[in-house]
Image 1 (tube, one colour):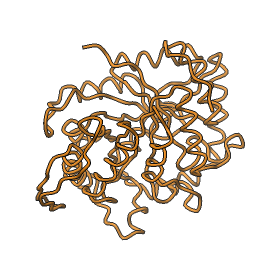
Image 2 (cartoon, rainbow, N blue to C red):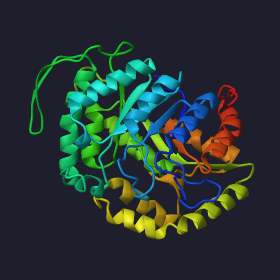
Image 3 (cartoon, rainbow, N blue to C red):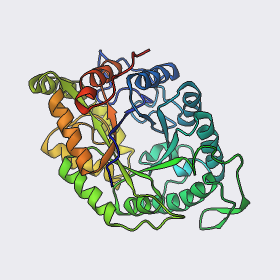
Image 4 (tube, helix red, strand yellow):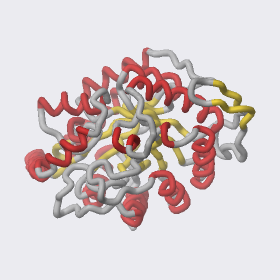
Length: 362
């Protein structure tokens, strides 16, 4: 079977910069207007997807702005024409029936370009301050497994009756169902064993945190060995990778800018320490980031530069091709400064990967 083509996405700036929070070249801006303009420009440049992370309160700077994911996704669905809109969702926050209805509505607004990204929350304070129970790591995945089993069936137009530890749903069906395909796509993040089992049974795409190619290849091989045991006939699992990109004319220039961002990020040490204190230490993402950082300091979230997309334009393109050969389809990218680096990537790296010429950005 032929490999799916390479696709590129960009993280929406829902809570400010991804690398250094005090970068003079990237003033803090998590506003709706900024997110809208970033996504519209990404679409014009030829990017294929955007990921809108979900937080209710800014996880880095609690007194700063935080974009609300699902209302923003609905607005972007109406404003865009081609780009895939992926909205993260933490199951504890929304009942599966009402979330499925929201997902179907945004899917139909977008004309079949919407996806949900099921994530296991790590920010304990966000839940506890709202009086929402924050279960242990594996308990959260058990809750998420039951939750997505209801959501996926409702999104597929089934009439659902369900009795489980957390939900009781009786003879529920949603209309209109998906007007464009069987149901919206389901992305799943997380690399722990409960996460992998959930991905195999219910996911369409597995989001992997940024890390070296050999580690990514091993993760993909593990998931490909697992049977697909979810509802209905699931297609083969696809794979996405998060990565922070620094691409320049030369390798030396790229590493020089990496060092510059590392120095800026060092100013955020107290902020990051406070964030870690609010985090669940069992979350595999943080363990992966710490392991990779021990060998080489990285910047960016969800693995960031640990994926190794730092170098000359040719080197970055070659590394992307290597990841694609290992099975990565979608590269969900971070940049800083976001808009100028996003344009640089489209102009310099897209052509090296036989991408169609970028459109003029708005």
